Length: 435
Ligand code: UGA
Image (cartoon, rainbow, N blue to C red; front, side, top):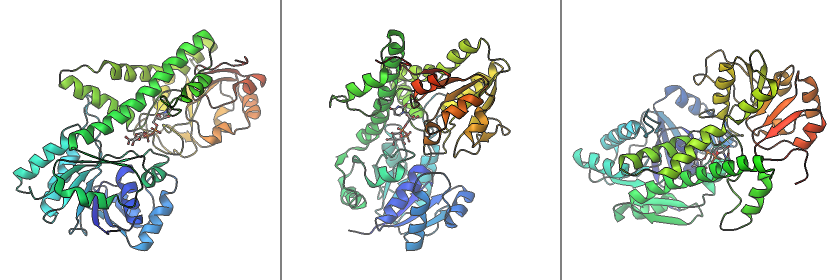
């Protein structure tokens, strides 16, 4: 395998995990970030966020001497490949803010040796790679290549996904850098799609939009199931047996959250709007997703009569299990909605320690579910952490003032909870009836 010298700009999920993966594959990698505190932690060998296996991989790569961290680019000024993996957060109109991508480009234009390639891993609006080429041309750096190499990793299984990708997508408008990009991905056994940069950028948005569509679709089916007395879990399982449909991303629940689907679906509809095309389907997907999050609210309010002064326990704060990421988590919306109606809300999560700055600084996150459930009038399972699924629910139900439980992920044994005396609801699934 050819060993390459690589710099990665951005030590977030994508940059850090991809950089460490490349270091593990044998490349020499420098990972740079503008957050000095994050870099200090990484230099000490401390993973800056919770991701299974990350701490160990970091230690391994530091010990092998194949990775270095820097606040601003310092070491790898001889890089052959520069990966841009900085954040592209949403602007108020839904479009992605690419200012950090262009700042990174300007820095690289000053530092990179002749003939290197800048490969964009961040999710960027379609056409960004071509704009970057134009910036480089104006800075008299047309010798640098530009590629789009979108990332498909999921939080919570990021290491597995990076080492076992379903595909590698390489977008290039100039064939000269084809071989070096193939060398970069050499250790990964995955089908490789080589295309132009615009198509590669679209592949990323289309993939996330399609997955989000599957989720909103099954949630709509679930809501109809609830009205006709059908069981959405069985519907999804049977649908998934058709290979044209497939079993994945058909888990009904409180909808999608996280830093990707909400942002990317809105960015794609905004992009289409700006081009004079209304992406009706995707707009509905977004709408369905925000409506879905509020399901527990109406159920609990109707069952209790009022939420004023009632204690509601939210089990799960991260947007999905195995991560401490709370960005666009349904728990944050539910917290605000229950509070607006006068309820006291208790938050519980096995790894999330704080919800600041997404909620006020003094909002506490408890680690022990028995503590938050004790004396509560109602509970919502927001995130399907195994710690919650495996609770001693008989004990938990006994400790509640009123055992009203909304299973927002269809992960609990609803019939068993009902036998324990709880009033249970979930998303489009039957309770107490053999379907
Ligand atoms: C997603 C994509 O799955 C990755 O391929 C992509 O690289 C990433 O976005 C990105 O663009 O960076 P991620 O947001 O980490 O990854 O998490 P997912 O596992 O896709 O889950 C997203 C949300 O959908 C979660 O809130 C999850 O609870 C929800 N979901 C997922 C469902 O409600 N039902 C399902 O059947 C599956």
